[in-house]
Length: 274
View 1 (cartoon, rainbow, N blue to C red):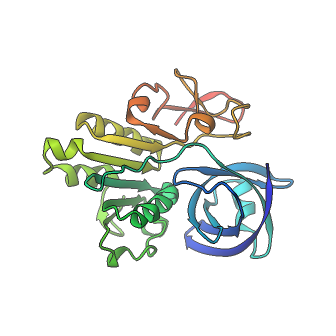
View 2 (cartoon, rainbow, N blue to C red):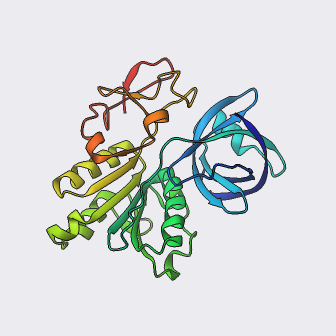
């Protein structure tokens, strides 16, 4: 069911990215990794990850301006209304044990669902390492958020392709350097949560498989319905739907997906290269 909600806050995060906050009273509380279908009448309905949630029913989505619908969202003002359906999909599975080595690895706008996850890990008193990457400094999402440098629960590593902020290079390279000195036992007691460009996550999958590290990845696909009807988010050869079976998939499932890191579908349903 679509609910109409009023926008209460808008934050300019970085170049071309805004966080939209609204009040949404719901008996179902969202969990990190789930998403919403955001509807703008006369424009479109698109899936958006939940980037934060508070107990006073404040929900947030973080939107990159990349197309007609996201551009329309960027034109909204405080007091405007949007349609919201959800929360939808499965979610990141947080270990019960406090002794796990946890890594959150995000690229570009993929940091959005990881922000929600990080807040939940902090609430549960988990320690973790956060790796955030982007092509350029002005594309780093949440660079000044979450009091990165004043937290005991986690350490953060920034990287940019051109070295304009943080370390020069890719998130995968930083991750490999962090686990280089870990023992086999420590590696097998680790969990990686990731969201971002699929090429990045594909490389992470193979690093994790080589080191027997559990991986949970949030996948993105075109969706028209968000309920398993349109089939645009199907992944071959398993026939899994990102909306119904995801968006979170584990390494044991990802390694069986021939499409992962290689193909997706366009709005006509045709398979195209990523």
